[in-house]
Length: 344
Picture 1: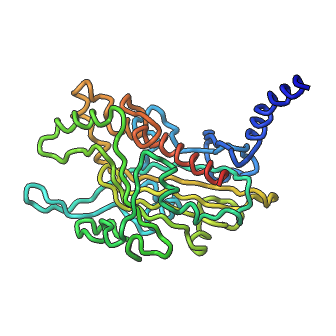
Picture 2: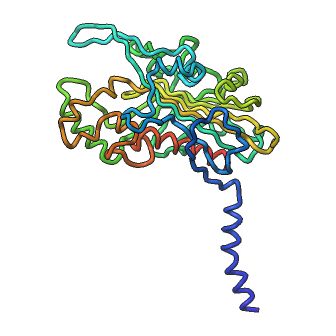
């Protein structure tokens, strides 16, 4: 009897392990690169797999995966309209004062767009996106970024006349119904702070690079009329069951905007599954990418070229958050969101 009891006890960990491995609530999603997400049939995506593309199809280019904003608008007008901060968004025009002289300036942007699609083993009508449109949830997606509530009146484009170019034409930021307004900060990790210090020594009276990225955003579940338009993006012939976004409208440096968007639609022929199409878009100041000569002449900074760092191709890249580069950051953010949908 004792031997029989011992054998049963030994089998418990194996049984538990098998049960946990089979449980969809504990699924861990992994990304798989595909040529394109648009048009990809959700039924063909393997369980716990995220079909992912960020259009990095030219490895020889230092800016592989970045596209000029104007070209993006011509090539993908639906993306430009729905993944920009708002449909009428244009590259910034503003007045800049240099040595006491005010000059008009047009700022060119380049855009990084990551697209992903995965399937959650849960009916679309049982996913309550309001549970995910909160600061605690966003904090879980990337613990390296710290978030706190922001009063809509304190949104920089609203209160600062110099930032008027970043305002929405239809409403003030964070004043849509059921919107959470967020102030966020990310301190650069690894060797990047040291690299920033060295790079700042090269600046002769110019604007210094901060050792952190701070940004403001609004987080919300989209109302049905706005969500319904997103079929233009997903190209899935099914009604949109829900959508949420985090819309970054102000950043202290390097970027001008960012957006995380997730769209839920039922899987055709299987009401117990939901197809999720997720996007991460980041608008980068083109002049930041042009900083090359001053870094190239300093051996220790040759790998600090902004395009290399942003696209994760530098020895200064580290970790799993923004310091790892935009492609790694986007993959990890989308994978964390997929895991959360499956487990909640």
